[in-house]
Each structure stands twice: as structure tokens, then as C-alpha cells.
Image (cartoon, rainbow, N blue to C red; front, side):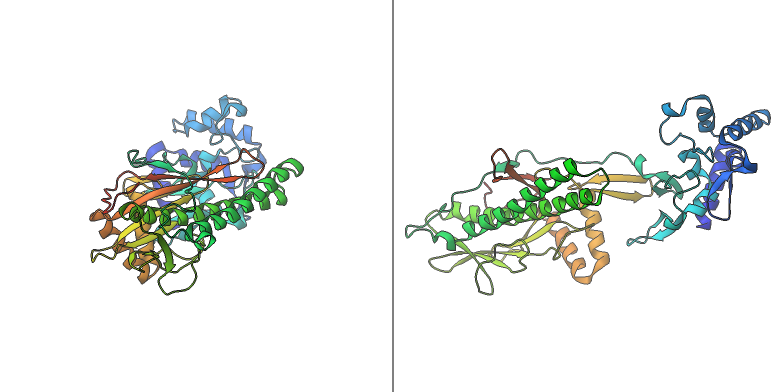
Length: 425
């Protein structure tokens, strides 16, 4: 913390020729860790005195103090609005080393970077304000809300498409499909189960908004539940999408073959997106295995610094496997963003950006040896054109009484040169 405070003092003195003195005059830190008006003067009086004093001595006071003094507070941006007790604006607060020392602490992140976090024991401050969340950029506090807009390369539009649910007997061999014992009906039952829970959660959220006050625990619980079940629905659709992808490849190559899925170690097919078993696409008549699909992502909720789903596709042809990364989305799920702290400052990149991809790999390398090995495999696959990174966004028809599964948007991210060894339709 001492290094941060010294940098702040040096920067303030170098850039303003004395703004730190003006700020310290306006707000005197107390032993409680809060700030209040020095000498018991009200904030407006202090602002006037500080401005007059700085003007008379040719000191350069922070221009925001001038703006605060001359304009009505209702016209000010929140960063410029003075506190009712201290008279300090948020801009002035995060430029004050004493304010930072009393209301923040240094925290070491998983990547070894040092960040500045709000001290919950010193919040709110004397103005009744929670200290604003900040980044440390080149050693100085900056508002997190002032981060630059997220960078994105967008999607490969030539390969993007909306895929609809298939009839259960698609690619049926002459002997006929196995009905409810087949993989696709099992997938659809699992999807419908998640979709029903999503609809119930949406209705509960609408009821909570209608019947409970803003900020109530009921509202918080309702939106948290809706978010969770929507994510699970998106993940289930994404697991179905990888099976449809592989099934479609071999159904096109062998139109008279009934292609089914089974677990590599035997047993009944489990359609759940939480299944950790390797699945084989095989000829139901001869038992010939065409491909194996192995889930490589961490079990449970993806969380921060993870891809939603990583699928290893071994086409049983003696060549290195392909890797397919899915960012699974509910119909209205937002794209995630990642903040990168570089030597040139802060950048924000959106899910799918090559730098988001690389930052995720680095996070994997920091966690476990197994994830580090997988990160290395993913880099090699990207280099060799064996990596397909895409968003899978589930689609729902909500026009009827019961919501219906309506397929998914298949949108590969731009910036990756995937070379499929079999046609993708």
C-alpha cells in the first residue's frame, strides 16, 4: 500500500502543482477511518475557502473543485458530485492518498497482480457513500466504470446459422429407429425438463417483480434462480449441439447407417450435460465406432476464467483430435467480458476474442497441472486449425402457454482458422 500511496502523492504533485494540498485541506482524515469537514466548517464554506486560497497563492487546485463550486450538483456527473459532509467528489476521493489508505486495502489476485479493494470495515465513508470500485492502472486508482469498451472480433458469419430440432427418426436405417431408446429423444426429454424449470423460474421472477418491493430478498432469490436455471438450460442445449454436430457429419457420409451414441465404457446413454463420460458415435448395426466425444471442461458451474464447455473429438483416424469450445448461452444471456491489465493500461475483451482465449488458457495453467496440459493442447489445436471456438445460444418459442425448444444459434467466433476434416452442415 505504501508504494501505491507514494505514487499517488508524486503523481498529484507533478500533475497539479499542489492539488494534493488543496484536497488535504478540504478533508481531514479521522481516527475512525472516515472523513469530515476540517475545523467543523460546512462543505460549501470549505470549498470556497480552498478555492480562494489556491487562487490567491497561484496553486493549481483540481479543476473539479471549481466545477463543483460553480454548478448546481444536480447537473454534475456522479464522479464530480461533492459529498454532503466532506465536500469531496468521488474524483477527489480516489486521488487522495489518505482516503485510499483508510478505505481500501491491497489484494493479490490469482494471477499475482495486486488490486485495490474496498475495505468493508471502512464503508460507507463520512458522506454515507460506499467507496467506488477502482482498478490500479500504472499504480494509480481509476474507476472501474471508466474501463474502455470491450473489444470483439465478432463472428464468422459465413459459418454462422440457426439450427432447428430434428425429427427423432432422422438418419433412420432400413430396420427403423429405436424410438425412445435412441439418443435424440433422450436429449429432447432432458432439454424439455430444463426448459420447464426455466419457464417456472421466469414466472416466479415476474411475480416477485409484481408483488414485492425493489431490493427485497424475494426479488433477489427469484432473479438468482432464474439466472441459474437459464444457464443450465443453455448448457443442456450445448451438450445436445455437440452430439448433433458429430451425428450430422457421419449421417451425411453414411446416409443408410443408423448412427447412435453410447458410453465408451458401456452402460445406458446419459443425455445430461453434467455427464463426465466419453461418448461414442457408432454404427448401431455393426458396432463400428466413428468418433469419440470426451468432455474436458471442469465439472460443475464454469465460473470465472473458464470456458463453458470443451469437447475433445477423436475421429478414430490416427490423427490428432479436434477441440470444440462452446460458450453456452440462454436466449438472452449476455456475453462475458475479461479485463486485461497490460503495460499499456487496461483493456477489456469480450468472450471469443483471441486475447480472451489466451487469458483463459493462462488461468488454466495457474490452477492445476492437468489444466495446464489441456491449455497446451488447446494452443496447439488453434495453431494447427483443429480448434473450433463458438457461441451456442439456445432458442425458445415463448409464444404459447408452454415454452418450446426451437433450436440454437451456432456462431463461430472470428479470429480462429478452424479446418473441419468432415463437412459441417
